[in-house]
Each structure stands twice: as C-alpha cells, then as structure tokens.
Amino acid sequence: MKRFTLCFAILLSLVLSACSSSKVASSKEWTKITNGNLWLTASGDTVQAHAPGFLKIGDTWYMVGEDRGREWRPDVNLYKSKDLQNWTFVKKIIENGVTSPDLGKSRMIERAKLLYNKKTKRFVVWCHWEASNYGASEAACFSSDKIDGTYRIEWSGRPLGIKSRDCNVFVDTDGTAYFISTTEENQHLGLFRLSEDYLSVVEHTQLFPWQKREAPAIVKLGNKYFMFSSACTGWAPNQCKLSWSNNLKQGWSPLENIGDNKAFRTQPAAILEIKGTKTTSYLYVGDRWKDPNLAQSKTIIFPVTFTDTSCDFRYRDSFEINFKTGEWRETTKP
Image 1 (spheres, one colour):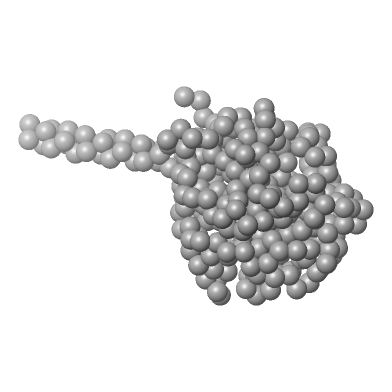
Image 2 (spheres, one colour; image 1 turned 180 degrees about the vertical axis):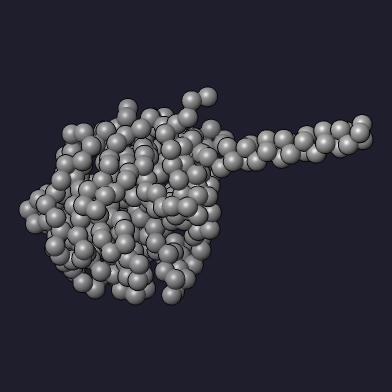
C-alpha cells in the first residue's frame, strides 16, 4: 500500500510538472507589442527604418526603411527580427555616395520597399527617388542576389513618363508585383504593374483621380483587396481612409473614414499578414512622424480586423500576438 501511494505521488508530481511546463511554454508563445517608444537594438542604438517595408523569410521578419539620423539625406537600413519588437541591425543596403553617386547630392530616397522575386531569386527595392525641392518626382529600383548583399541600381526616372512620389508595393497571390504611388503633383494614385523580374514598369492604371491620396497600403483577403491611404498634408497626420475592390484596377469603393481624424497620429506604411496554425491576423504599421523630431519618429503597430467591406481600426498602447497560431489578444494583466 505504501509503495502504491509513493508511486501515485511520483506520478502526480510528474503530471503537475508537465502541465506547469506546458503553461510556461504556452505563455512564451505570446509576444507583447508596445507602442509609443523608440525602437532600440540590443546594443541600445535607435532603430532607423522609417516608412518601413517588410519581407518575411521563414520565421524572420526583415525590415527596410529610411535612416533619418541624417534627416534630409537618408540611407536605407536593413534590420531583422523574430517578433517585430527586438530588432538587429544587418547593414546599410543603399548608402549615399556609395550605391549611387547621385544619392546625397542631387537625389534622396524615401519609402524604400522590399520584394523577393521567386523566378529570378533576387531581392528588389522600389522607392521614391527625389530631389531636395521635390521637383524630380521619380522612382527608382535596386536589386541584389542576397537580402543582405550588395544592391545595385537598376533603373530610375518617372515610371512611363508619369510624375511619381509617395509610394508602396504590392505582390498579388499570382506573383504579379505592383508599384503604387501618388502621381502628377499628388493628384491621383498610380497603379504600376511591374515586369516579371520586378525591375521595370510595364503598365499604368490611374486610381482615385483628383482625390490627392498618398501612403497607400494594400492587403488582399480572399478575392478582395483593401487599401489604406492618407491625404497629402506633409508630415502632419490626417484622416486615414479605407477603400475596397474585387479588382485591383477598377471598382474601388468610395473612400471611408476609419479610426480617429488623425489616424492616431500615424501615416500608413504597411499591413502585415500573420498567418498561423489557427488563424490569420493583420497588423497595421504606421509612422508617427516628427515625434518629437524626424530622426525620432515612432513606428506604431496595432491589429486590424476586416469585415466584408470595412475594418475595425483601433489604436492600442499594447497587445499580444502569437506568431505560431496567428492569434492576437488584448494585453493580459500581470
């Protein structure tokens, strides 16, 4: 009887220990994302990747963006992270006076965005390629055979002869890539289909004529496209608006106000898809410009939930996300 009692006690202890370990492992799967502070690397350096673009490879997120340490002549930095919070500096992939002799002199870069071409196996960066007086109104394209390799300039100019400024990229589910920018003195949005190698523009479709929209960010859910965009008010925040369509090139719904009247003091940069074993969640990424200055502008992330024709767009100081299952939840109390 004593032997049975001892065996039972040992078994119960093992079970309780396993359950406890399971709970610890489960809690470790959740990452808390907190907004409002400067992002710092493990070495304590400020993360300089404003107007960021993202690319996920395996379980690693890569982020490119403007290094505003030299506020008006930004290089393009590359960082990596497993959790969108703890970032490691990789390198400068586009550098003034190095990648191109024009950079830092007659040209500067804004809104660098990163793509990967599965056919050519090359990494491609598209960006706004501009003069100091914003009179150039051009775009540029760079590529490398490695994400952290040497990027060379492939092309620069006005896409198909059209004035182009604030921009983003979008890759459809069939692999077709698009460069989308505000065009013709910020009057319209231009949807530019890229060539199969992503290195040139082959087709233009005008969207939202005379609506003066910029900072476009597109995501696709099923067969429906959603676009966030901002008004053209310089560094000052304004009302974020949403539109949706079943066709990238036509049929976009009227612009709908979402969030508060200043997009929680942000401007759209990206919409990230977090695809997990249980569900898929979406994270809005926005720039909180000049908070308190350009070099210390904040990056803001919060979850958005889409309905059939709209979305729940609400800022959160913090939230928790499970990158394995794809779920997110409100911050739990300690």
